[in-house]
Amino acid sequence: MGKRFKSLKFRIILALMPLAVLLTRVLARTIRWRKRYDFSRDRKTIYAVWHGQALALAMFSMDRGIYGLASRFRDGEIAAILLRGLGFNVVRGSTEEGKAEKGGRTGALQLIEVLKRGENVAITVDGPKGPPFKVKKGVVFLAQKTGAKIVPAVVRFERAKVLNSWDRFTVPYPFTRGEVLTGEPITVSEEDSLEAKRLELEKALYELSSEVSS
Image (tube, rainbow, N blue to C red; front, side):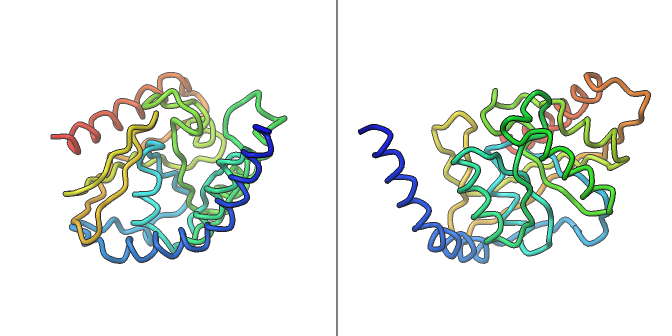
């Protein structure tokens, strides 16, 4: 009974996704951005964002052909539909090692190919299941293997609803003002320690997040 209920709930959510995409696009168009990051100047760039701000950054950067990552779980299916509806390309899987059975290795390899072509990728560095605000090594691994730069990014809104979820998911109110804050690009050479670079990225995101909350 429980499995059938979950399956029915999932099918209902999928049926409502076109409406969710439409409403998200309408909401995104109402936001007045104070400072627009120039995505057109970037090539082979990884935008690193907290999971809770994934929607916020997607609203800012929609219809630019950026690649996003969505897990192969049911939540990932919903995220993939939303991302495609916002003009993103979507890779299914994970950047973390040891998850090939869930598409992990496939996801990482696809992203490596995408970045080597010079495309840009957005990754939630603490997703898909947390722990929250803890950068995983996958994003640093991708940068090391491809030579891509990592741009840490957070989004600040004048008015937004922060949900009581594990990732503190942020949804802006209509017609609010928004701003994308970015840190200095981080590069990862073959000689660099993945852990050291992971901590460097985590520190950069913490510093940007403190600006948002101040």
